[in-house]
Image (cartoon, rainbow, N blue to C red; front, side):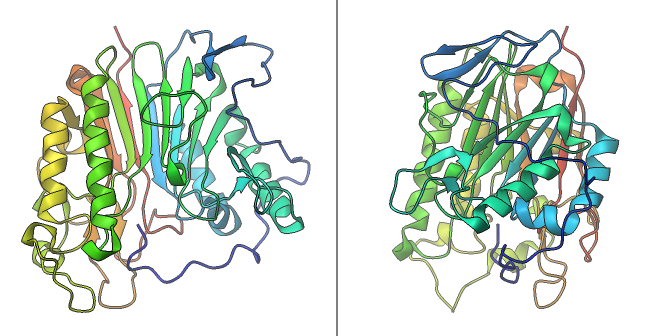
Length: 371
């Protein structure tokens, strides 16, 4: 979500991350149908998607974060974020807005599971990112990528190496090798649940720009997905780009009446700040109710937390100073609600403490072990 933030810096210039000089670049792990087997896990091809021997221990501690350019976070905020990950020690890290381009030369088909490295600049950028992810505390994770053709969107999923999923998909249809447009989806199947990492399309401001239509189509597909996914419970996380209730924004009247260049959509349900329009909120209610899903944070935190209850915050300078929304979530199937131990938002304040350079802060979920 980048509506109110100043334009991000170009990725060409950077400060070198504070990493050990002995760390060598690590090749990007491949989500392709034929990955290289690790010494401890034998992987086999199953209809083009990855399959591994089920781990004895499944993930129970999860972290989601819209990084607003993972490369920029590595260049500018990595020591602080690394310290946070080290202290939290999540089993799974779901990242949105990676903003690294997919592999493939200009005019050629792209490989959204690999980071671009066919130019001098792209090689340096990939090396910088992979050095960071091969250094503590990230060297204990395997990473999957789903990337856009350009420096836009994209998601990543990091899972501890001894807790590997049975299969990994990159689309809501669970089709081999297909990636959603702009790399918006990574779906990992574990023995007793599915984990869905999504970067949901922004609703936008104007019907004429087709953004309303794009978001409606997305919400329809998500509803169909959760209704069809009946064999295992679901953990759905990421930047969902919607604030469900008035309690989920700091200034309901401000967001309800927000306009861009004075434009008012023809349908009143589409009026207001993207992410807080009545139409989006109603569709989200339908997805939760029909899909029998629980908003883990709101399940535990019934009252509004004015200081630490929002995951996105406007620029500290300007008219959006102090305006906040909760648009990053952990949504879980009702079968898992009794296992919810904690769900926390790890940023606070107008000065964006705990945001690590992004306009979003990390959100965590802890489940009790399955019985």
